[in-house]
Amino acid sequence: MKMQVAEIAKAVQAVNAEQAWPDVNVTGVAFDSRKLQAGDLFIPLMGANDGHQYIQSAIEHGAVATLWASDHADNVPENLPVIMVADTLTALQQLGQYYLQKINPKVVAVTGSNGKTTTKDMIASVLSTQFNVTKTHANFNNQIGVPITLLSMEPNTEVVVVEMGMDHFGELDFLSRLVQPDVAVITMIGEAHIEFFGTRDRIADAKMEIVHGLKEDGTFIFNGDEPLLQERAEKVSQHQRTFGLDAANTLAGSEITTSRSQTRFKTSLWPDSTYTIPMMGAYNVNNALAALLVADTFHIRPAAAQQAIASFVPTENRTEWLTGNRGEAILSDVYNSNPTAARRVLAAFSAVPTKGQRIAVLGDMLELGDQSDALHMSLASELDPATITSVYLNGEHMHALAEVLQEKYPAGTVHYYPTDQQPQLIEALIATVSADDQVLLKGSHGIHLEKVLTALEADPEK
Image 1 (spheres, rainbow, N blue to C red):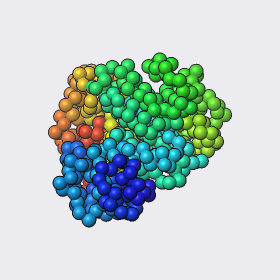
Image 2: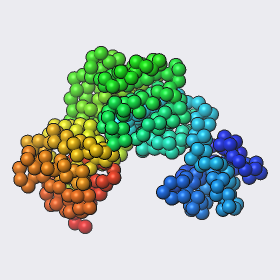
Image 3: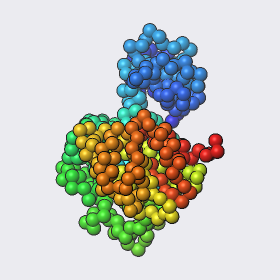
Image 4: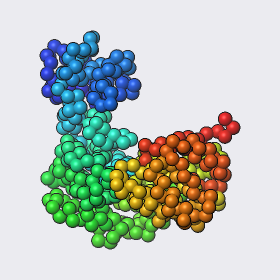
């Protein structure tokens, strides 16, 4: 982005005088003073900490102006353009929407219980074959991250692909109305955040909020294999297209084969072509189908979309194969977890050939509420000692699964560690792993299995 302070002040309806807004160019925005770059506008947000406390750090990192809440008027920084607003988060959102309207790209919004980040990456890849594309960075998918994504657009952006997350009703409604998508995509309905919603039906209701801001001439693309979405789509007036494995979908996948490094499949719209994605797991085919359907909606040449799907780069820590320092193959999926995603990854992991052991390291799945024990126990359906030799469980909620597996697995092959005993898990795991083994790491980010990954990758001599 590139805007002058005066333009920003008018966009966010600043409450202070115009003389405070000199002709200073702003080239970016940041709410974390430590990550701020020279030329940025500092956005001091109110959360666990008051962002206004970090104004000196922002100045030292090169801030050229700052938003400032009017209830902090007593300690306004000197020698820095200040844009006074009633609420800094609201102002950030107003600025994001203003800049979106100024650049005026097409907007693709993506949500879903699982697969939204991978699908977002795939969509950006296929659209980039013909358009200048900006996409959500990492997991910037909430009320803060979405406007940050919008403000990261270069002036020549033709399409912005916006990932949208939620864990309460109303969040997707707000984000959808903020960006007013031309295309809205729902990948699937699972149990993620069921603690807040109670049932999958209510999760589906919340996900459907993504169409609340969909343009009248927009397109709604969704998983047609999900009855909960089929039912709710009947109330949507915009054009609809579906993907899935059922032949009745607009785009159906078939003839799926998968290995450690890739998955191949065919489609109903282009039956003479074989598509390849650089990821394991048949469940990723639906993500690819969603991306291909978006590509077709934007009239991307099928051959170009085929090549883009084959070469896209997934976001880090999303079912990523790595190599440990003992030579073992590590399937890292440590960013997030929920029952649907965990079962799918376990099924795919179990099918990958190996010369050694398959070892599953599973961390707590969070935000499951009263159903947590039952949903953790449900993972037992994908854990078989004939395919996954040993299991390491970390977290208080994983105790329920440990008890079920003790009856299914030979003695000494199920290892349970409470949350605070992760160091002991790491020590025991490292003592067990050898060069020919495959290790799966899957858990919610709050359980921090990335520390297990770091230990497996560390030099054993140090």
